[in-house]
Length: 314
Image 1 (spheres, rainbow, N blue to C red):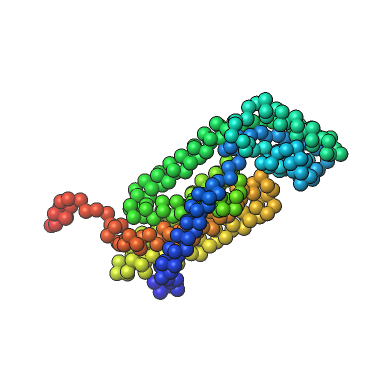
Image 2 (image 1 turned 45 degrees about the vertical axis):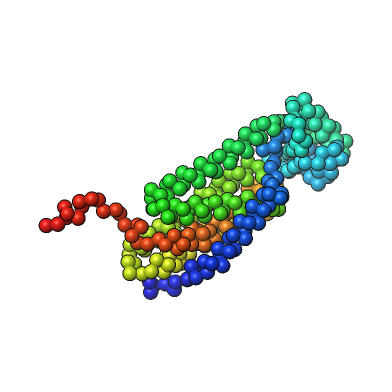
């Protein structure tokens, strides 16, 4: 291990365990107090797309909609700066039906026309019932659960069950904190954010597997080295790759978050938080759990079949 200066990451495993526990408690506490701010995709409501002859002021449109009596809505540009998408989220207990959606469209279109000097043309309307939104919510949660189970099976087959526990714990840690961020700051959670969370699972898993692969390889090479030193050495070896990959990805996501518009802001935010916490968890959750479970080189040796030693004797 003389070729590089080994960073002793695992010397800080106790403080980082406390740090992770605090983040998880804040996230879980926010779920209990605030819940999730589900968007139109999950709650049901009306979507209206309109086009202006001149680029409108989105803030003025929002004030117009508030003046029409609607409180929970979203206004964003799409395609061009003259095209506007309005999403009205249901806040009442009763489900919206098609008649109410049509009435909302007429009211908003009339209000927009009355408060704009340019011509307003309706491009299309859409309606999502509350039942459909509830089904999407359940299917999204089921999708994440199935992904975690399949990952645990895959890691168990490729490595060993201790590695599987570490990988799934890191993924659960990343997903919980990412969702907790949206709950704590009351940011809308919609299908694009759900897609980003699933992408975080894949990205974080890839980072963890790179570290695990090096740990497994070094356990077989450095047979006389203490397990914690092998883990420190392996993480140090992969650190450059991790920082370059995560750093370049984060630069793109920050640019998308700042300049990509409101439609993909939640998507970019979820990936920024998820990739940041995922890079941390591949070192201080997944690898840390290996030290607590006392992984050793014997865990990675192929099992000796019964009678194999006798057959190998001359």
